[in-house]
Length: 149
Image 1 (cartoon, rainbow, N blue to C red):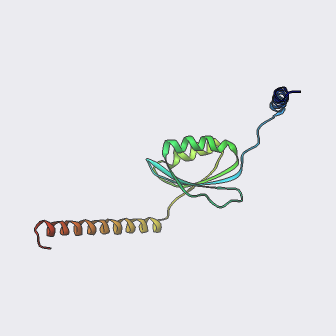
Image 2: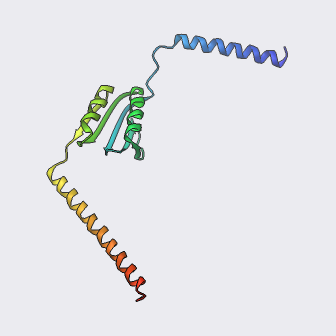
Image 3: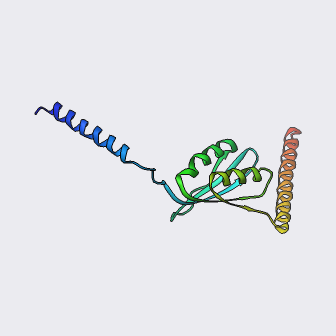
């Protein structure tokens, strides 16, 4: 039998087996086991990290909010169980409902008063540092423009 005919016979056998496998297929197995999804939600974007069952957490990824929602809608059905966690905020209730509708067990963390006070202090400290750098730049610019240095 020539090589061409052998190839045709093998290809036909593979096609037949492929059709039989498709007929015998029931529901496809879930691609992922238990998955943990941590999210830091902001209005224009979301930073999230995933930890698959038995694996270390993956590096955080930043994505636009709409794209992230589309990605999550495609990802959750492939998982056996999804645990999600994010902090309460302006968009968190809608996100909570959407994740719950998709079958995720969702935890919404509410920041404590002490934590909020630390955030306020951190923001004020950052603003002061930025202002100091800005004033230093203005001073250097003024000195150079006057030819003093």
